[in-house]
Image (tube, rainbow, N blue to C red; front, side):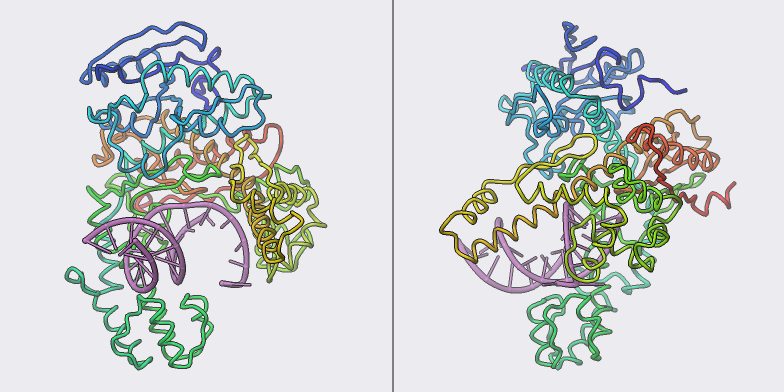
Length: 581
DNA sequence: ACTAAGTGCGCG
DNA sequence: AAAGCGCGCACTTAGT
């Protein structure tokens, strides 16, 4: 069942399947170039707009080539909509972003502005599909020659790397891009009825356009009474702050945290108002109208949207769905949701990256923080949490900052790794994740400030400002290696999950709103850094739970070959499965 | 009327 | 600015 060609690391052309490069012809038709490997001459097929989908379908069935395109973000959705799924791909834009900044290559990728993603938003949302005739433009320069040259350049760069880790990263990044589009196509099953129920219970009936919901209006009036300012708009921080000061509440900001430590009659209604205002503005009726159709929430995922390699998202705030609304996530009839998340992924990655045996020991079992307590570094779980987070984020003051030095004595290798990354960042250096994604170089303004501050006639203020910016960058690079490696683990996990789900038999009952490809297939429906949700036929719930665990083990083994580190999952099957089964 | 920056809060 | 990292989005205010 395990086919080496399907593995996310099967990026080496000699060992892998043929590559199918796809690009636009000047005529507006499509060009498909099949290359057995990087050196082989391509076999060119030119097809019309109309024939592209059937052609891809046929080639996919016959050869399962690695589909190599400028961007899957635009190439893949129309295929999915037409019912065509592909197994493997190479996203040139995403891999260019990885390879252009990688210092460890002896044949670095020649920089090319044409292969820079203009920015996440432009590429994600507004840009018309390549399938639209209007998107064809000479200045895009995404013709077959350009695509082939970039592809060869990337494979040459990968071949010059000291080991296969970058190739694994590029393969995983590309598979991630497939998964991102597949998840958008399938959507996250969302019960509008359940969501409406929550909104009405919390906010009251849906207000007329532009009006405040009933419960918010009542609270706003009460806040106005408490502060003797009946027309006060609690949504305006400056006015609210002035009103608070007039009433003798001397806070420095109107943030929830600061207000909650003040004793005053206005605090309770104000905090309640803020909570409801957030729900109303971020995930209220307007959000539901805009983002949920056919009982599906379909955000756009931006693979590699964060410099560390994490995904970002665009539209609907997919990565910020409040816990409060998670109960609106409901499977279709006959289906269920299996979700899984990793407890303390980042410190586990740090323990394994640094080969810190004491931290690996603390990571044994379900709760790493309890393990830190067991090691004697700190007294309570709460302290362990603050200390570990502070170590990875670079805390220097407060509760967290005070605890970090204790970790240095107990986990010298782990702390040594993040401390070194921070030093490197402060000095303007570049750091890398385990698979070789490099942090961005400091920009010119940063470098200039550092140079000037160390010059002979630097003013004191200028000097301390530059030092502060240096420390800022140190905290960024400190966190980069951990957050980025955790993102790599998650990417491998996703790829392994997808691979295994594809081998499951079809569903007995279709999930129609999941689209033509996924209506009869268990499928990934959501991903958030260290958590996934799979929408699956009820009869496959247990199989999926097992797949999620097996895939996690496979991801760990792939990232840390021959090294034992616990990465335990919390796996949960939604209630409807128990009832239905 | 429109845009950019600041504030605040949701997620990991 | 709790307390250090990474995000997206809505709202208000300040500036054009």
